[in-house]
Image (tube, rainbow, N blue to C red; front, side, top):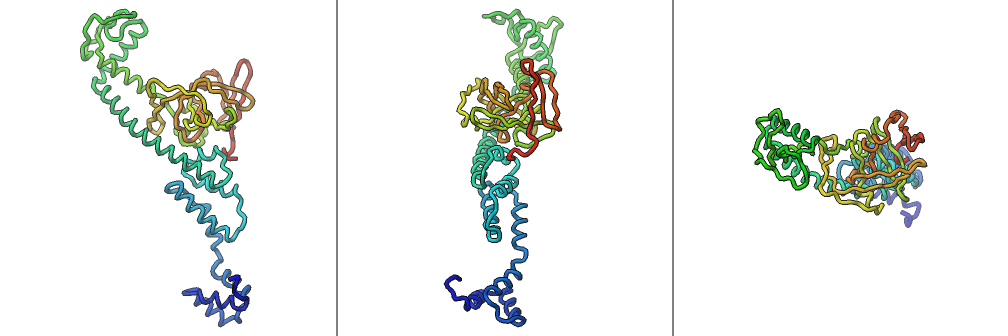
Length: 372
């Protein structure tokens, strides 16, 4: 319209009016004189643009991710572009906060701790996290199926009553330094003198029963299943919980978010963080199963020994199992908490207190959103 003379702008604009717009202008002319360009713009805005700004803002505030991150980003940006027609300046802080709130819960925590400065950065982090989750689910699904099938086959091959008796006998022999299979005194080079039988139907009072390899395998498999590490849903999803607290800490020059979680039996480090820290990891001889509270079974194949971190003026070190956590950088579980003995935990005020080398240490957890 800039190249059209002022006197012809209204005429030019009305040539492109159809339907309701054309009917409105026809009625407008019957009531008003032919408008100037500025009067025409005000009249059109008043008639057709009364609630568009407000409605677009509502759409943005209510927008939630329902498909992929890229699809969510596209929908989000479309609304932002429409809002910019009414507000030429919308702060990046507002936009990135709104974008984070609309992300799926399982993605949000991992993206928030990166403190993205704008929507583009937040979307990039979210896409990476989405890919990590997709790979983790794929590996976990195949591993869970294989592990459960293998465990079930071993355990189900022995009657439950015999399995319980065998487990008690194995524990008795372990405590007394006896061979698990035949019950004779165990020493290097020991060879069982008796042939093992397939089942243990007769458990004599002198504990002389023979345990076959099949039964011992079933007992060991059951013990492994009972002793598998536990991980809370909060640790995996990034969600906050009344019986957890979060700490902001430093590992080298990396800012990390730690979840102190009594619902996790062991301590873990996010496998994606290891790539940034460039620390030395050790591959486990056998993969360790980690049971999530929602029933999921994950696979742990690496660990980090003596990892140092700094928090609120204190330096700590501990061993961590590596796992795709998605929600937090580090999880301090019951194994870390138990080493301090008596502790004072104020979950409501989000602090924990214990003694370290004769000094009382108090760690104050985050009481606001991680991104603040």
